[in-house]
Amino acid sequence: MSWRSTFKTILIPIVSILLVFVIWDLIIRAFAVDAFVAPSPLDALQSVRDSWSQIWPLTLATIRETVYGFVIGAVLGFLLAVLMAQAKTVQNLVYPVLITSQAVPVIALAAPLVILLGFGLGPKIVIVAWIVFFPVAVSVLDGFANVDRDLVNLAHVMGGSRWRVFLLIRIPATVTPLFSGLKIGATYAVTGAIIGELVASTGQSLAGFQRTANGNLDTATVWGTTLVMTSIGIGWFLLVVLIEHVATPWRYRATRRRLGFRQSSTHSETTP
Amino acid sequence: MTAGTPKLRVEGATKAFDGSIALAPTTLAIQPGEFVSFVGPSGCGKSTLFNIVSGLLTPDQGSVLLDGVDITGTAGNVGYMLQKDLLVPWRSVIDNITLGAALTRGTTKADRTQAIDFAQRYGLGEFLDHYPHALSGGMRQRVALMRTLATNHDVLLLDEPFGALDAQTRFEMQQWLLEVWSETNRTVVFVTHDVDESIFLSDRVLVMSPRPGRVTDELTIDLPRPRTLDVLTQPGFIAAKQRILVGLTGAAA
Image 1 (cartoon, each protein chain N blue to C red):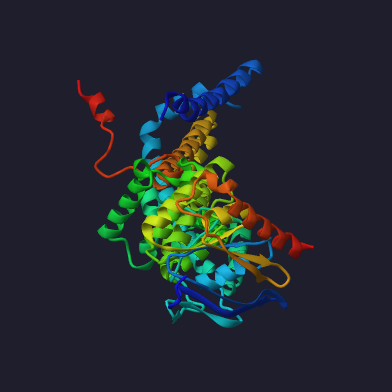
Image 2: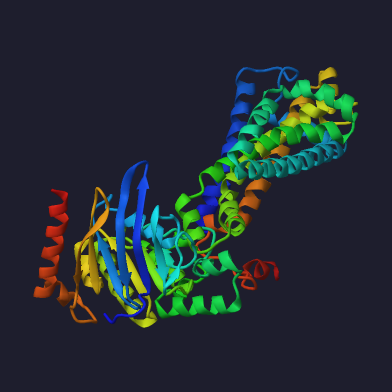
């Protein structure tokens, strides 16, 4: 990556986030907002640092719910799209169920899930998966519909069997739309986990921690916890973007990386 | 051309879509190693004819014979290349060239060796690991032709392969195609809108007309090979061009 594109892809987003914090801080100062109404960003961050030993294990739990639910939802969404792509009849059969599932208010889903699955990881994972599978299924299904007809025809003319054309042409063609779906899912996944924690938790959770802080009128911690939750979402999104870069090299590189040809620049930098 | 079993024979093939005739009964024979072009306006049935020969379409009547064997309606018997290069974006140049093998039986070391050999012989050796998006239009068409050659079919169907290229690149590609053709001993069936291109490349030109799609004229081009730029101004070239143009515009009137 050239210096210029490094600047564009990494530095500019960081600057824009910092800018949000600066504006937040300016608003607090300009209107002299009381600390128990809304804290300054530094106060919110300070509160996170102060109760880090409590927040960290709860954050790990939220990450676990997010990741498990995300992976299950993504796999399910992808498989559903593959299934629907096989025949128009299957698609007509499955699609209404897909839409209906998303019409169910997720918050209203939590209570029945607790009755079914108890207060553990179960309901949170289901909620996250419930939210994530939809954009993935829709994007991948779109991907199947948009595979270049001429390319599929060419593959058949070249003697490709239905199965090989599916494996070598149709499936790889859905990878780019798959990642669009995954990125949308990644931003919603944490929200799903927190909703699950709010409704289906006995209190040992990030959402429960925030509720306690709220009860104690500890506004800085309330905001600080929100920042932590947001960070999980951003971190997960960035990880998906990173995986996308590794999984779809043809979109970012001119040449295929050959095995055994890794650049060794990173090693030379670490040697003293 | 010597009489014998033609490489490719189309016998009374017809095709209609929704009652309108896309291809009237068509019979033609193409000899081994021959370079035959079809010229004609849109809707003259040349794509239908191509799709019948490639096996994408089954004719309503008639048959297609390759080396005397009936291949009507079956794919995988001929090489096929379109104006769109249709390179697979996620496969590198070498993996695009070996696509035919991957689609039929899995790529072997021999396939890769052959692909590298083709690529190096025809000026793509430096780009084996490039993805298609990093190549120019002319280079992409070269890779597409390499891919068609690598399927090792004797007959290559080329449907306006250079239609999207600028004039300069197009002329380079035409000369390059003739070079590849003479070295690899394939039979080429070529479709184009471009009359000059059809004469410059071919042993024989078939003129097609629409409504219904059919072959209306046929002429042998006996200009000497190898052909260079000079050919374009020779009397034989001009005469052929005039006859084809009359055939095309007469049909349109």
